[in-house]
Image (cartoon, rainbow, N blue to C red):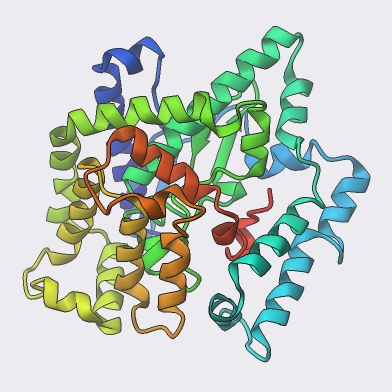
Length: 373
């Protein structure tokens, strides 16, 4: 793949680290993203730094399972198998990817949530907690590892959301076995392409699934995770120019992947064409940068998701159903009650957490993302 995108994302993380270090609240809390070197050599080949003493989140969670639990997880009664069965039930004769699209049209919120909760309940709810207990020599060590893990994950999530990074399945996170710190890897999907271009679009802003939330009992996602996200977002919003001007590189020299996405978006067409001058050479990267600007000005995250969804799926039969799921339900979801823009940092983060933990979204995700973990 073209590693220029990964290299540039790492460069943007470096810029974010500069912004964080210059912000009093963030530097006081030692908030820094862990980065690594990426060296593209050709458009299809490059070098990536080896991360010492880490394992994937998938391994980390699986190693916490007993033999019996691991067998059950991968069995015909496991979550993946039961999801496949439910998809089949909801999509009739549809095959492959189209099963998901039919399911969006046919499955109600109630059915989706009930089915998702039952899949979640087949897995122990405390796998992350167990893993950190195993790493700890004392209760103090456990609390310290847990805090470091949660703070590094929260910072990574909010930073990834700003840059529209998706495809956050369990093998795209690395955990440091000594410190409990999180590192994101593989940025093939950035600037909203996981929502716009994947056949089963991603409607969640980042990964904040049950294992993460339960690790932070009793306050769950509303303690450290929430406060780290608010501090980081405030720092980014107060100093947007540095980030936006660094993104100019993407505008002036788009990577191969961007060229392909641009062509695909044009072929699909849709009403968005009326709003943009596609004869302008840089229209595609400029469009992506404009979404980052909107996020930094207080846009409602669900509105951004719906706009990205429209760019790639407007002509799909299930587009309206997908957009309704992303927007949420005003009786149940904070994001659906808030305006489309002009939100404070606190409100933006509340909407993001609401969207990331919504079982009506998580219950419809592509199976390889393993949302029940």
